[in-house]
Image (cartoon, rainbow, N blue to C red; front, side):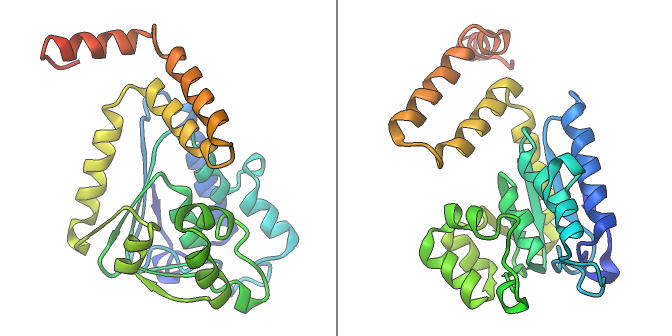
Length: 239
C-alpha cells in the first residue's frame, strides 16, 4: 500500500484515512494476503495531519482517524493481525511517526527524520505517539520526543529502537520487499499468534504473559503447518 499525496507530502486528511482503513480491511479479509508493506510516494513518508484542512483535529475528524470501526486508517494499521512493514523516507511527522509505531517492522531510508509537533500545536499525539512510543523507546526518549518536540534523524531513531533498520534511499523498496518475503514464508497461524503475544506482553505481568505464550504454543502443537514444517526440517527439504 502506498500513501499517494506527494504534492502535500502525504499529509493525512479524511480521504487518505478512509483509503488506508479500507485497504487494510481488504488485506485482513483476503487469505491470499500474508503481509502488508506500507510505503509512500515522494520525498516524505508523511507530513502528519493536513493543517490546511479547517476540519483537521475537530472531534469528528479525530473519530474518523482513530476508530477502526469507522474505517480509521491509523488504528486499522495497528489492529492488523497480519505482519505490517513500513518503508519510510524523508520526514515522518505526527501521524507519520504514529504509522511507523503501528507497524511490526520499520525499515527507513538514511534521510528519514521523525518529529512529533502535536504539543506545540495545542494537542497531543493521541494515535499511538505517546503510548506506543513509550513502549518502543522507554520514558526518557518518549518524554523528549513528545514534550520537547525534538526532531530525530534516522541514526538516532535506530539507536533508541523507534525503527528496525536503515538502508540507502535507493534500496528502501527492495529491502522492504525482502523483509515481506521472509515474513510471508512463515506459517500464517504461527505468525499471527506470535504477533498477538508480542503485542499483549507489554500489558501483562511476566508470569501471565508466559502463560499466554504457553497456551499459544499448545494451540499450534497439532496443526498441519507445524507437522509439515517439522518434517521438512528433519528431511532437509523445503516445506
